[in-house]
Length: 176
Length: 276
Ligand SMILES: Nc1nc2c(ncn2[C@@H]2O[C@H](COP(=O)(O)OP(=O)(O)OP(=O)(O)O)[C@@H](O)[C@H]2O)c(=O)[nH]1
Ligand SMILES: [Mg+2]
Image 1: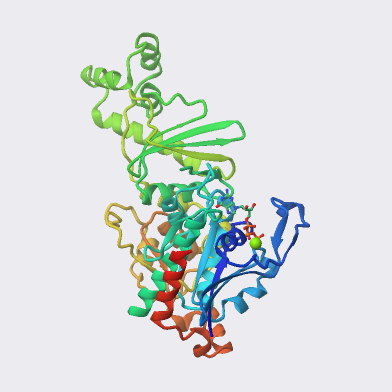
Image 2 (image 1 turned 90 degrees about the vertical axis):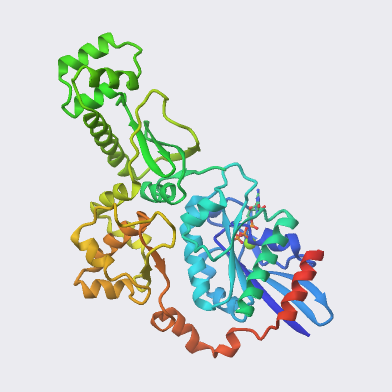
């Protein structure tokens, strides 16, 4: 049996766990725990090691989705997760400009791990304060040849779209 | 869609850069500790600025530029009443008080004074309102943002900020493919031209600094200005010069890094996800 993996990364609370939860056929195996520091306490739980989701294609093929822990103090995990990935998604909370610099830095770090295709998901587009995807592209200096996709991680169709666009990019890369 | 936030996280120069590159039309509202400012743009060009107690009216601008005397301004304020700036401008030109060039220059100078002051605000809330325009009676003179940004960043000395904005000097630079980004109308300094002449995806920023005998601080400042003005773009360095890359490669053989996945596998994944 062949297994392939994709990595979902991005800053703290950008929606990585939600993204995987929306599409995984298994209950997301999250290694979450309650947040201790008050500064980070915008929600109850944070992922401390990784999220783990699965999509079975057939008896011979399984896709695994790994979500990275959002807090930098767990970033020793990143490189291990990045190893052998088919591609990756960088999730950004479009309504939180204070996280844009961090998102860009995570993007660059993952790019340096492996030369695989990736897409940027402008998440939480349903929030009234969300920045438009085109504005995020300039704010994050995402190159024109990289897809920047509007996303609502709680919406399965939106998550499907992001994964499909990533797969199309992977296919394109194989054809060149 | 909202374009709002805190200047602490997204600075005035970053905002100007975004508005310029996205060719935005609308008004930027900024509020800092009770002070308020608004700056309007049309298709990415600065057209109007107003801050605090300045009334932003033509008579005040001409007075400030020394084109009208104290008495003249007083008279205008007393008698002109509801005359719009556009009407007043025509009246003044016809009466031979000022020329059209005087008016344009005074407005530009006033707008720039206000804008350079606002650019220095480092805290406060901002919100951009699409398509919102200044009051219709105001005379607006379009000003290229590139020059404003370059001029402003020349005086920027915050080392920490520059390091955050441009952490990696191993990146190279290239000119954007975007049409309209031209160096022709920009007033570059000699130092800036020296940097520009070395721009090539093969030259890292560090190498450009070395060739020009510039310190890291000097090169950061110049490159930051060029970047924010949208005149150049960052490109990642060729693999061999990227220490992070080669370190990662040393640790693992390439065969392990890139999975051996066939096109049929990707196609299968695509159909499966579509069916979910
Ligand atoms: N409105 C809205 N909320 C979202 C969306 N995506 C995620 N959220 C919410 O944002 C919060 C953070 O989402 P998570 O999925 O926990 O984020 P994360 O990236 O896994 O966070 P860490 O693991 O702590 O880094 C949760 O309350 C989610 O329900 C979205 O598209 N729209
Ligand atoms: Mg999580």
